[in-house]
Image (cartoon, rainbow, N blue to C red; front, side, top):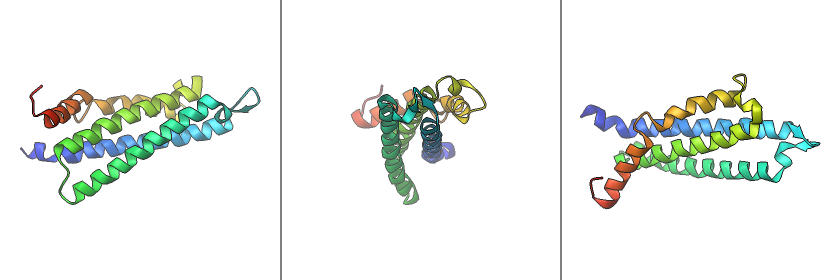
Length: 150
């Protein structure tokens, strides 16, 4: 019973870690794409790169706003297990998408262990698993939404 009471806090902490990982990866990627050149211009100057960065930063900013709300709910004793599941699900899925985009923008360097993006990408994979898989989070959310056992 004690463990069940702590799950919302644990899931929120996983969500916050996912946010900080995505934010860090985005920072490294912006730095890299503004410094690295191809065909005589920075990678960030190419429309696809700019669009990928714009999408990633938007997802991270929206995630951060949701997690701020969740932290306030936790601090006031109002964070529900369902809201914590939503935070964990969304945060780890956003982290996965953002790190995938960022690694792609690093090209071959994204797979070299000397680059932090490669290590962060590998480390991020487990985020959608521990603390309850994404599928478990969806089950919790769906049960609350429909009142049905899935």
